[in-house]
Image (cartoon, rainbow, N blue to C red):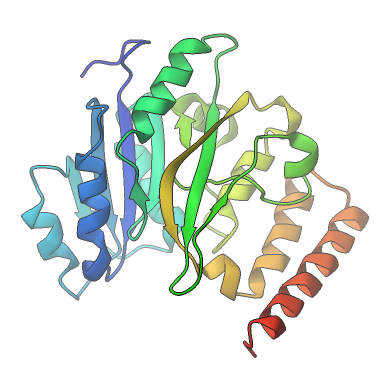
Length: 254
């Protein structure tokens, strides 16, 4: 495996559970990458719907696959971390799609910005709703903004393996905000960067947009990581929840 500075190995981890109807396209988007030094790990939570058949059918693309019960997506991602060989690690949902030049763009940026060594690089994403207009989301890394809310795109981002050595793995107590908690731990010392290019397409309507529990988890992550004082985090929780309620009323959702 070539893990030189100019041609590092990228590990993609896809967590699945009963995702047979969408997984094939996600795997195909990995196979279509113009950057070829990649390995794909599929961590399945014990699917019963045909997901394992898809994985077997695509075994020429999938480097490693496991299927066993887990405690949620962050437990699955931690299992992927233990199996990963790459210098850089990318996490995808089973219904997320990488653009063909996603990793080529990332690696070009890494080659052009060797110092200081980066631990995290994010990008833009296309958010694709079931109906309505596709929109581009994602912001450049800024600690003051990130300490207030998760405003960067985590799916499809690159994490250097040293990030997990220094700050630990995903906390499986979280169901929704484990990625936010991980990146908060480094606070303003995180060597992070941003490429202003779309690298991934995301299906709108994920759990973080539907589940009111996201606000409590976000508050807990801010406070437990030391990223925000309790008073500030409490106010931000209230305002975010209020905005979410207003949006749902406008969308006609109870």
